Length: 495
Image (cartoon, rainbow, N blue to C red; front, side, top):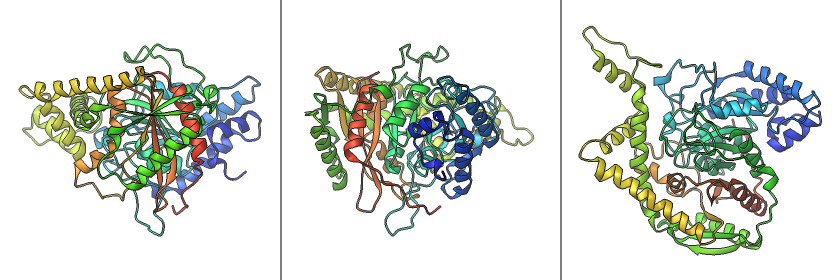
């Protein structure tokens, strides 16, 4: 069996349990693919020795005769934002150069306890700030997809661009991502994979480098909705080390994938029909609506009136929290410290370290965040944005109270765009999050499912938004959509 790296988690699990393949074989195949795919810039820290060690341990568990967890022996890529004991982790930033955590994030600990294998750390935008994976200290991650007849390198999306690229190119069976304003769902849509952002509090944030603490949430990036259900079950659970972690039982998400959505009510929000939206996105959305209707769901037009304020509110709240969280990177506690001249004091040390250690986008957001939190502007910007956030959350609560089970929207306003296209225009870059940020502001679960190709052969995704804590129901609706869409396209191998 030569194409082990192309397996889904569900397929690998069944083969591993049947003894038809070993975790070591799976892991070695993926490591070989990752090594050969340097052009994608997806893997940035190698942990191959640890991976083989973990794979051997998984094989011993699998051969022990007992029922093993679904993730046992499955090779994964881990986003560079997750602290992994003894393995370098920089959050894509120069300021954390040389940092090797002495502790394990709760999410990776949960995965490793289930027997999952870590192939290495994956590329990402610096401190998860970006929509194209072009702000990384490691250089760009590249989308494995290309336009028909065009070799222009495209973005895999951000900030989980390395994760999206690695999964889409079959370098690993799945990957972890984090989503603060769309950083799982947008890259998933750009690369033709499935990306799930769970309800805020479903996955522990402990040991994940913070960007905006009230918005950040970890989730799975996988080759199918079934895989997302399996991996989410392993990732989440209550964690006393995270005060925002929900003390709720973890359902068997995979068991809830019946594909039966008869009688479910799907909302179509009129405010998501943006001016200038490409016709292909409109068509995809209409096709997705028809697929869900044909599967037995009731389609209902709904209104989320405060949607138009979501992007401005997000780009006040997220930088404000980033400014606060990134204050700890000062050249004293860990990571990079600038070289000082004679006579330099502690103020110069802070200034030089942060100037050298942070990239332009991080500096931009820290400055914006510091500004909106400053005396005289706190009420005008930050407090107002918090009030808008409450109204956005209330919009969703009202819709769900009226009987809507899930909401269908586009995942992105376009297909993947060329690298370098928006680097000089931050506002254009921020507009990529227009369909996704509301979900983070309201703390809801959201999933991107690949649903078609555009005229140039690039994947397009649809987003489903669910009720809080009802990821199982959301995944089942996504499963029905996935089945109806029948998306099986893969990028042509050029790397």
